[in-house]
Length: 386
Ligand code: SF4
Image (cartoon, rainbow, N blue to C red; front, side, top):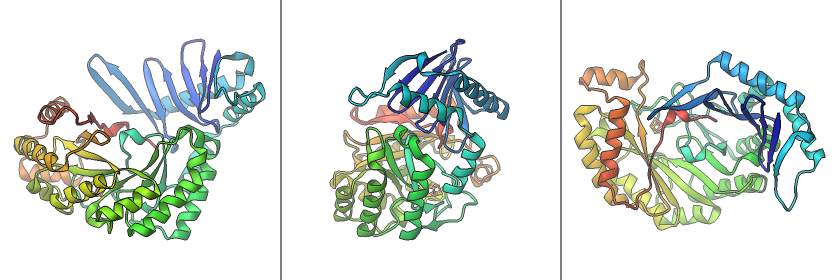
């Protein structure tokens, strides 16, 4: 066995070529073995990914697979010692000593996945979803669930009671997140204020929350990238450029908007709150304040019957939003919950569902219609883990 040390992770490389990485608290976060790449969330869930020819396979790890991965990680950590370090890429200004590395190995050795999952459940309500560039963030749940919770296609917060924390509750939550993540904070690089609408309060109160959050965490994170959130304009009191300037000054870096489609009629059909005009105005106000935006568009929404309108009306909406060089546009294939309201709508409306390759093709059509400077990429929600 060999060991590789970074500022943010300790990696065990087994003699068979498998790789296991632990964060600063000794918690397993990545594994690579048998041709599969595994990401393990703070909740203890594991997602398995690999390429099979041109196709990307993404699935939850089976309970047996997960247990096997944890057992192999435990065995390696038991046998590990600082003498096995092949490369030490920790910070040249404060390199980890053998003693530091021994302590780290010891934390991996003593890591108890069941106790950790229990602490996670004490710290967080279920985390519904994050943008794909935020999977190494620290989520702070200012709200739990989604106040609207009526979009037919969305099951991220189904059955979850909406709750907006008071400042006292939020302060306690901050402390418990810090305590739960412990030394694992150093593996994280941003803050994400959740959940479905991370801006539920007026600008001054939100700026206070943002400052509290940064003060509590920023110094502990490695290579801090900024503070992010989703926004649902219809249920947020943040409206004007001045509001967003206040947030920018407090430290908000990027806000993500679930536009879903640029067709007003399709948005109404799928239960989306608010109007396209409201979305555009809010995004433009954030951009004018110097906050970057992330726009999420669903691929396959409405089925084949809506496809041409979804593409052409989304493209014309994007002309009003005008994403700039700092902004992101995510194309997110729709995965339908078979027992959910969207599946029922499909039946009633006689909608024809697009296959995954057809959705990717729809993404190409959208991409081809956008100016070349737009940063478009696929947002596959099956990869989400926290
Ligand atoms: S507003 Fe967002 S989180 Fe809430 S139901 Fe709609 S898509 Fe889901």
